[in-house]
Length: 208
Image (cartoon, rainbow, N blue to C red; front, side, top):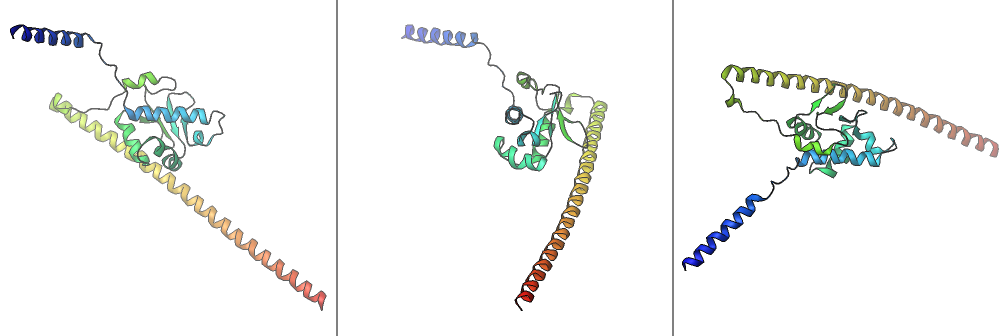
């Protein structure tokens, strides 16, 4: 009985040593970043000639150190559902923010991160979620950190408000164009109707 116990003990010890000797598992990049990278790479292949619909919607920027969403509406409708379980552009932006992406301009939906680059998928593992641990800092640093966070949030809100104004302006212009086209359509229909009436009257006169 004692020998059996010793054998079990040594056997378990050997297993532990083997397990301890195994190399650590490689880190995996966050699924959100992998999917975002993959959708850009796929669109590069699909729209490699520069005329593809997908590349017209979203693509890497010219330098390859960021990407641009040129049509948020089409991106939400056609691209997001293929890679994520939603079609919410605002949710996609919030996810980008949690990983430290920055919107480079208030006029375009261009996002950058120093570790997110075309052809450098291996760098994705170095991107992590932003963490806030105020308890680690003294009270005066905590206050400063909170003020900076509020300031950044206000800046993002201003950018979103400005973008919203631009979108409303574009929408108003499109509505005006649609109204003009409809008025032109009505005039053309009236001209066509008059032409048909005159043509019919001429036929009747000839018959008489």
